[in-house]
Image (cartoon, rainbow, N blue to C red; front, side, top):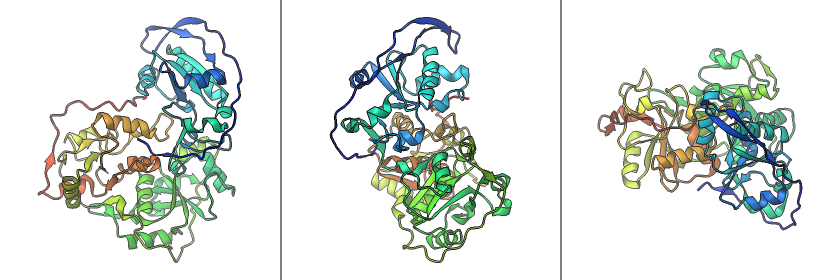
Length: 468
């Protein structure tokens, strides 16, 4: 079960609003050219909304952005987060899913065509966008426009849950407030830095030199890892490099990257080292620009710091560094190895990298989804370019016989891609999760360790995220 942030109880009375609209219907062609009955979208009032929460023939869908779903209030509501068991379908998905994929995509979210679907949001325009899309697919849709009133009522606090570390994944609007000198929600510091993350020194950093968030710095991934295994460097070396970039244990660090995994790789390294407040900009530079954020090409150079503030590494328990240790602990502690690699890597068709000689997987490793190749993480991203809802990933893992009580070690080829699901487990407070840093690269270097090729596994499990 996801570890939700607990909310402090207070008691107040609830109110009532709005009445529902009547229903009419017509027909239209769905994505597969089958005619479907399109019912008029209804509006549900507060009383009916509250009564429907415990009814099995209703489903609730949150159409807000990730930050609000995860736990931020954005100054709109008293209790941040989402309804227990709500499904997330952000309004920003509308128009970003291929028409011929839409029907299955919505269904794959777990939204049942045979149930009444209640959509809720604090933005009526966004609510209507999703309601119209669902109704054209044949869903019986109810709009609840008074979620703000519901989430401001102390009597409803037990029905609203948030991820325990929701603050680690931030929106572009949050970063805009931060860089404008404001104090955005959950930020109580006076020292922050925003970094674009990619390989290479600043003069070789293509993404940074093309354009970057105004005032941001470049972070070279070589400052945290080294070959030939591409494991983390020593804590002392990473600390030295962090200090050169003006990072101490008390610096609030905001990371983003053009590469799907780079920012998450550095997030893991800095958290392991002991930086207390590391945030990921959800959606990266695209979300920043979509929100009207300013960019520049000017190279910014941070002021070096002298003292990190704490002993390093502060969180060594996050990591299983090397293959031999991983093999021993898997055997003795029952840790399940979860492969965050492409299906072609998992089934031994490719090693994934030209510098990794052998193809295969550690013996007994379970497929944990990734992308179509070593260069993408499509299974973990939504159509709008933001991070996928963690519960959807956990649902996929459950189908792979990875239970929420299992001890798991996430790995990929060299420790980049597994940074994304590891971040999700930290965001939600999922216990007993390790970052196996050496990955397949270190494992395949040791001929004494057992290997599976998995060529008998011919069908890739459905990631339920096909929108292109």
